[in-house]
Length: 62
Length: 538
Image (tube, rainbow over all chains, first blue to last red; front, side, top):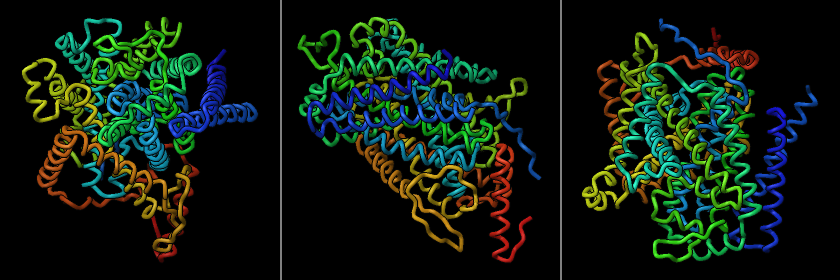
């Protein structure tokens, strides 16, 4: 697995980790103390998804 | 006619550009996490969130400026171009303070991480060993830089890749197996700090995001920086922000693998091991990763070593960066010419390297005195509220960063208004369109928000850090005196700027960067603007 593969795995890990954190935090209901954790979860999903899409675009464009 | 300066080779790839920034900024969280947990306790994640929002604004500002003006001078160059020589000098001098602190702070923390594997390096129990090892590291890095050996881009990239993988693994396993949201809520309820503690925590959290100068340094050595830099910078900014937010949330809500006890044998939460414990604060990531079930066994062995290597690279970037910025400032006649004198055999700015490494050693001595000479503790307690060691270094680091970043925001706003013709391949979002002197410009709202944010962090630093309040402004006053003395000697304007042909300079910058389309675009815009005013630009 080359560097692109490792980056792909990490990107999917970010999305997965973001979803795990989001679900675990929301399972506790709304508490303002969880706000920075929720921001973190959304950022993880956004960054992971951005990288996956960027990699897909690069592959499409050769 | 001015002699043409030799150009740096543009051979840095997009990943090289990312790892250059990562090895500089990514190491900060290894130092910042423990300090913030010690200061802001249950509000550490909020401190990181506040500083993180400001950092995103700073990162976007640097990305826009580095893509528009891809020169290695960074903040100093942007401020000089926007606000003139004197303010350019002050911003550069503040960045120089940060680079010298960079050298000492990261060498200090590197030894702290090594102390996890070699207990003889522990600062509180073996202060002289700790001091001598730090001194040897600084002297070694200065020597390597004088003889011209730099860590290769390939090694930088390898360590950065290893660290991104390792940190992702720590956070994934940590959140899966050791994170309890109810512990996070409990910590924030029961250990919310005083306003003073929160301000202190926020001012320390900003040190986890220092080193954005590397974006412009990488820009100078990247082919077609206007296209590459924005792509790599946005990824870098988000990655660093995510790591900082993750660690702080994980540390507050962590169920440690092994129970933790205080000095009296009472069970405590994981984050409490950092309260009033300078040794633990210096190696927070190593301690946190060791508490992840099962994975902690492996992490105990390699995380301190990986952290130490990353911190050493960051310390080296301080030696390299300080000499480079002093060289750039001397070339612009902001500092005496001695700082651009190059060693006859090694072809490196040896005097700059030795001078600023010497400043770093002085900072090391000031930071270490309370540990080396216990009698001095009384004096430090009286004068500096007992701040020494990492606290001392972090104070000055926060002051230098907040000062230079404040100027960069003002310079960005000024350049948007006064240099609308330079092509901006990347622009900070959320702008208000205006017309100034017949030209369409865009006023950056985010820069104003960022300026207010970093301004408040500067105020927090001055309120909560005695050393930052005294030594930081003293450093600036000392620098301005040198500047005024030098300019007077050279019969240069003291408070005004030397006339410069910025348009011609911009053409050369774009040509050297290989941004020929942007250069053509710039030339045509300048000619149109001149024609509208009835002039012809040659």
